[in-house]
Image (cartoon, rainbow, N blue to C red; front, side, top):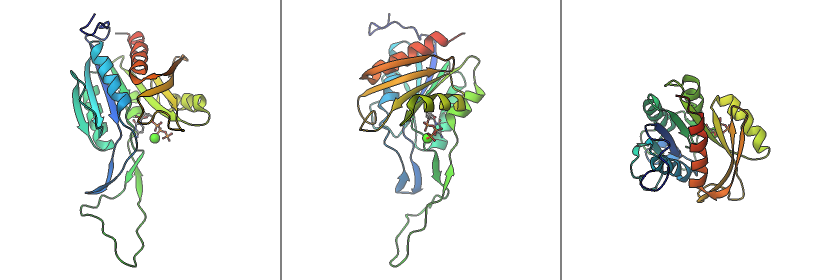
Length: 226
Ligand code: CTP
Ligand code: CA
């Protein structure tokens, strides 16, 4: 048992967690971003530390206190997040991608502030695809037996969408939550279903993000083979 009275069942393990939301700059003062607060990823990092793991937290623009005992790597963009996650994942037992990674970034970064001109309509913003970090890390498995976990916020047919996404990404576990009506984003609570590539389906009732984090680590722990 660790200092906080929790079983140190992740002792000797290295886990990587990405958290927050990437920002894709248009110019020095503007970016395309998203509403991810980083709370779920930080809860994952804190609970992993409490369970004895060595934790690398790759944090994209989250305004939250550093989890005590975690190694925090700060990134801004999806490309930077990819670099940091790949680097940390080399010797990781598990990689959990809780960050909201922008699917697209502006094709062009304007090094000076974009100015408006009277009588001139703004140019459309051209976008290009960002790398898919979860799919890449799932395909590469930088360490033998490495477990990879993704997160997905879905609407409509949540479970079917989640199952299709799990297959497409090639990860071991996908935490799916339903969004809309102020659910999940920025709140302290979360409700989800964790889908396993092995066909399992683990419902997690509405509760603190730490509770969901602990379920994720339970599922990771029981799948670690080495
Ligand atoms: N993800 C990633 N790299 C990206 C986009 C997403 O690593 N460029 C990861 C997220 O961190 C998350 C998972 O993939 O763990 C699912 O993200 P989501 O946006 O739901 O998946 P997408 O494939 O982008 O699907 P969608 O078109 O529904 O946005
Ligand atoms: Ca996406």
